[in-house]
Structure formats: structure tokens, C-alpha cells
Length: 303
Length: 243
Image (cartoon, rainbow over all chains, first blue to last red):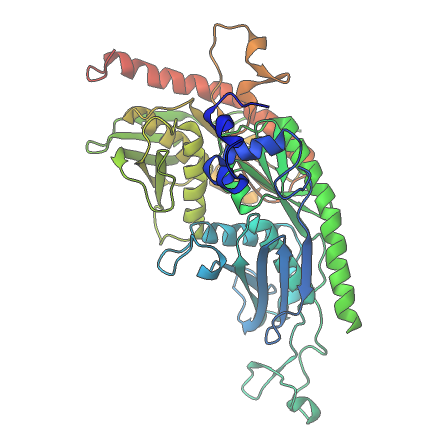
């Protein structure tokens, strides 16, 4: 099995790790021709995914999501604000994606990752346009008070497919979210009712009764695929992403509609057949992710 | 089903295109691209020696700076920069000048819809003006989807805001070749029908998306012709170019 290039001559004399570092593309192509990847996954399979709800006790909703080694921690804090004049009966959400230096050797304190604001914006667009959250549910008193949900996602380990893991953790955090109980105080401002006051008689009735959940419809799920020559690899690791630079991220919501198809350049052109195959892989992945989230929710409700 | 567009265009009609190259004196290459009222100015400086720390020194790298018309630089501008950078990296031949950086500065003059495609077209023309080696040109188009399911090309800002969803797509320019058609096709699809970049906003069904792709592909041949005609006369009369 001699390859007609310099790499082939070395492969019989070199250790595997050295070959992997020196000729990464050749190393991967040897695997791809056997329809397998270095971590023994078939080309179309995603890595093992774990979701755990309630990871941050002090927040109103939180979740930890791991896809392979990529780890994301999402937490939601709710604050009361005055709604804008154009939409007096709607609350809002603010999404911030952080890549602290712990996640990757590339990120240093003075050198923030380029990809962080881009992922923040993409998450915000996907969460809003998919219709998962009805902003009217976040309203308290029309025209006077509404909830602002601050969603912060921290990347703890960046090993490829960052957007997928971030979206999964955001969705899980929203499904764990419990809206705090509030009431109007003497000056007419909305304050959060803390646990100690609940036993005493309140001057006014609470604006909302118990800590309720948001009703989530059409949840978005995503899958990133790498295109390389004729191969399509689902859920890449960081090494795969840096060697084969063309990726497509498809976001579908649970009603099967396309929320986003993001392909930012890359040396490989995507033909319609490749796009359709990526969409089919995402549909399949969506079912897996839906089961994982449902299971995490049911575990939490048992507690 | 007929829909009346505010400026009286048909759904498949693009706005009037205009492109002028060499508008800036100090830049190595520059171009101003206008689609209707949307106008973008792009300048190219480079190749300059050295790459940034995170970039691969074995290839040339492209750096993009996006300047909005007003306001501070926020996440939207960073997203545009990233999409533009990756798109331009895929059309430049990066192995010719390793360990160099080419800077592309994009200034938004006026935003009236389809801003990112306009910027990509302007950057491509500026790269040609600077003489940066390219594999092929890129043609960018915006396609929007109305509530009724009608697909319209090249929306204005008002149309973009009213629509259910829109797609920005970048395709390679159509091949003008002396070879017969079959030799340039890959698995029955034309080489020039592959998608370089796609960015979508809003929710649409998968079939609608594929329909938008088809419409966009059909329109790129018109834009490619315009681009070719625009780039051609300059080269023959430009005495500073060799050949």
C-alpha cells in the first residue's frame, strides 16, 4: 500500500504519533479510505453526548453539555427590565458566548478567540428565529415590566463542533429554567420574592404564582459536518477541523424546518447532493439529541 | 402568484450593478461595487510579509477588516469579517506566496439590503485589481423568501425586513470553456454549481432552501457575464500590467 509521495516512504519507518504530527492530512486520508476515523468512529457518527441539568445552583437555569471532549456550561440569570416601546408585551434574551483561556491553547487573556463573537451571534439568531421561546411568555406587566434572560455559555474544553455543543447546552438550560416569583413592592417596582418572605403576609399578591417553566416548542438542534473530497464527516474534533477546513453547520428545529445552513467558505465546494446528505445526517442526529434531552429532563424531575 | 415589489422589479430581476476598480490611489487594489442603492468600497493591501500568530506560515493568509457606515464594531461586523475571510481564502491560491498576509478592508458606504453579497463582490473585484492570484472569481447573491413561498432575488432593506427568511450564497463564476460540457462535471453536476458559502437568516423549509439555491445559480450566470465584461477592458489598456 505505497503512497506515491514522500509521506508514504516514511510511514513504514516512523512511529504513528510522529506520522500523525508530520503528515496529518495523509494520516487522515489513510483512515478515510477505510471509512473510519482515528478515534474508531464511522464517518457519519457523532461522538458520545451527555447533558446534565442544574449544574450551576445559583442561577435560574443551567446545564452542562459534553459532545465527546467538547464541554459547554450554560447558565441563565433572569432580571426584570422595562420592555421596549415597539414591543411592550415581550421580554428579551441576551446571549454571550465566552471562550476562557482554559478551553484551548490558542486562546490567551490578551488574545480573545475570533470565533467567540461569531458563535454568540449565531446562537442568538438560531434561538430566536427557531421559535423555541415565545417572548410574550417573558412579559410580566404589559408596558412596564418584562423579563430579560441573560444566557452565558462558557466553553470549558474546545475540541471541535463548538456551535453544536453550545446550542445543546443553551437548549438544555432553557428547559431547566424556572422563572423566579416576583411581586410589586410599595414603590410600584417589581422585586423578586425571596424564600424568607414567602411565609409572611405580602402587601400585594405576587405577580406570578409558582416558579414556572417556559414552554418550549420547535427546539433547534444542529450538526456540523466536514466536507473533504468526496467524504462527509459528521461531528469533527478540533484536529479534523484544523486539517480539513471546509465545514457546514445545519440547524433544524423539531418541526423539520431549516433554521440555518452555515457554510463559511472553505476549499471544497458543496454540491446539492452533499447539502442534502448533511441535512439528512442532521435529521438523524436531531432524534438522538431529542432523546438525550428528554432523558435529562426526566431524571431532573424525579429528584 | 404575482407580488408587487416596491421598485417594480420582477422576482428574478437584479438591481442595476455597477463596479469601478482602481478608485483608491494608495491601496494596491480597490473596487467600489454598487447594487441599486447598496454600495460597498473594498481596498486590498498586500501581500505583506509575515503572518499573524495563529495562522499557518506555510500558506498565505487573508485578513479582513469590516468598517460599518455608522456605529461601533459589534458581533454582526465580526461575523461578516469571518465569513468574508473564509470565502476569500477559498478563492485565493494560498500556496503561491507562503508566510504573507493580504489585508482586505471593506467600508460600507450605504446599506440597502444584500450587504454581505455586495461586499463579497467588491472584495473579489478589488483582489483582481491588486493582482492577487485567484483560482476563480466568486459571485455572491441574496435570495429571500416571502411568507407566501415566493422566492425573490436581490432584496432591498425594506424587503429583507419584511421577508420570512433570506439566504446569502456565494458561487464560483460560470466557466467559459472550450472543452465539451461533460468533462467539467462532477457526478453529473456542473463544476460551477458548487456552493462556496451560504449564510441564512430566518426559518424556511428544506425544499424552499434548495429552491433558493436553484434560483441563485441561474442568476449567477448573468452576474458572471457582468463581472467578466467589467474586468476585461481594463486589462488590455492598463500599460503597467505585463502582457
